[in-house]
Length: 411
Image 1 (spheres, rainbow, N blue to C red):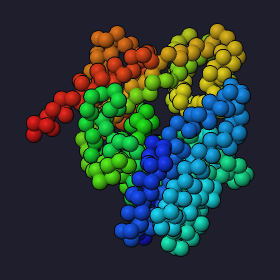
Image 2: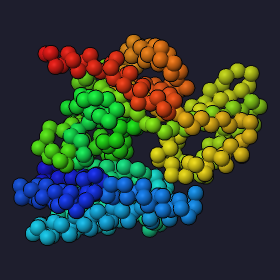
Image 3: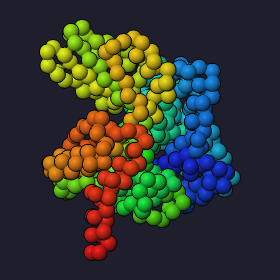
Image 4: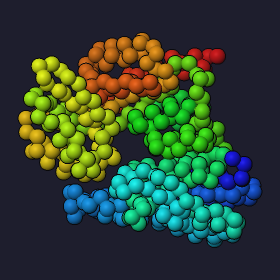
């Protein structure tokens, strides 16, 4: 990883206005002037993707996933072309490429495709011609020559996958915040900034709703050992947060709290071994619904219970799908839509039972249930009423992380 290539990614707020695009162009040009070979990945301008989804829904509550992909990829193409124009106007030779032109090959899962491989021949050709390469994030092309998108936040995946394929040592992810914080600054007053995270911790933070990075992007970084540096476009010299391999170097800890305001919990009961749960799985797949977590259990007397946690933000068509599913499984499917998820994140978090016990005690003391609780090696997640998600984040932060923050300030 010493070929002088650096990959930079800029989110939607960084390219939201002409003035911000000019600012990004200056930052990119400064990297080039340091002798680096620069690849830039850009998102659609702020709020453009949501506006395009609203446009699609104005014609159909359940638009074709293929056509949604065709529509949404236009946002990133606009950003990449505008940034390339801005760079060329400043004397920095640049070329914009779509995801397919950059060689991002995916499977056929429209609106949530996975990258299969990267064929960066055209990117390397442009770099060898001493040009800055600006790639439209969030998109690729399948082997069937279909345009695909990588899911919300997919430009992160494009950037880290390209960095890994190009053997870049570092992928710098720029947004409107200077790194990864222990909680959402819009929810918790002045939370700690995390200086360094392991790949696994960052992936869990992202899976649980932290908006700085897409979880699939961390998979690519982890596989190749690519260092991710999360920084602010508006404070480019800030220290940010480094995400790298820390395995075996950290003790069990709680490093952050993440949340999702809108999740759906679907519960299904099969009382006579009629295969209801298996048919529901098939129905969810046929409806192209992304499910975050599935759990089955025997609850006695031949009854099997299945729980499905569905992230609403990743399912554009959820409002039309749920009524169809309820009609198809009368009396056996029970859907709760007024829920959100709050998660404690940290390496080895379940090696210490006190974290789990204290979480439950805090929730019960505040009358928060929870509706469901799930654990993994790096996460404790609770489903709570949607209107109380922010309250729960603050509750957990003050109990688990504010004391550590105060200890750091005194030391």
